[in-house]
Image (tube, rainbow, N blue to C red; front, side):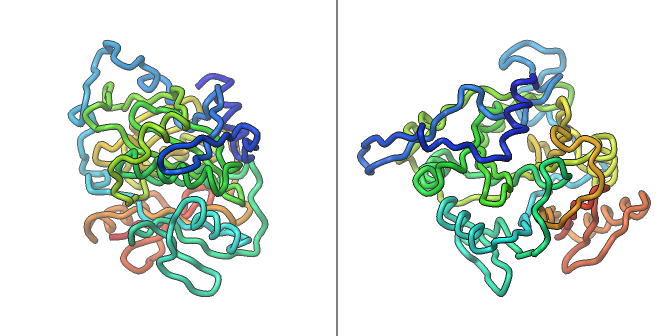
Length: 349
């Protein structure tokens, strides 16, 4: 990642005021608000090394498609690993809930005093829990962004159009990461949000077990107009979660060695982890938080959820955690563990 890209992403926690750049055009479906595309598209995921290999270039050890991904290992997470509900602790529950409902288009699946579970097509994605603690500082460890994965470009285009109409100022940037096409936003309390669609797995390139990603320009206007009106499934899943941490070596020890993820890409100040050959289920970076100690507040990230196929897989994570001196707490269907900065991880069946 070059200095300009790092500076762009480091400033992306403050919502970009793009109202002046939004224009209205007429299409068959009606009026569309277009996002203003930044020339220096925001990049959250721009690996170095294998990650910066030019698309289509000949690199030693290069494999196109799933065959190049790391093999499942005995001391690692199973191939069926997936991400579950991401919990956010928020101060203004009504405002944040309205953003995810009105702008992102999620529905309330469950609700009780001080808490709301939101999802799409009955799939739970984000749990909002009210907290009176202060907002986190920009250089605190914690959430970088929650990333919602859409099944097709048409569903994502519909969602982007909705955000453009309801909350255009929340747009922070976009990038083509070669494995995916991603659009970045910030909710009313500064929690990062990525909305993305994967490119076909057969097009992903792996070099010596690491996936090639990048940060090429991606015009939101063109994406919307190209894909709007296509066949849309109207569903979504939790694709990955990106965290801010204080030290990458400690992060690797916790997320790779203890939890059992594979490190599938290494960037300037970031590590990307996956199981089962996905491009990444989780990432950690120190772009804003290098040297950070334990979190100063529980507002922001409440917990990350990792779902495993069976109880034996959860037990194996618990055993590795205890062997590493990490406290393990039992919860319904699994365990809670905390990384060195107090980011809570829920591992469940």
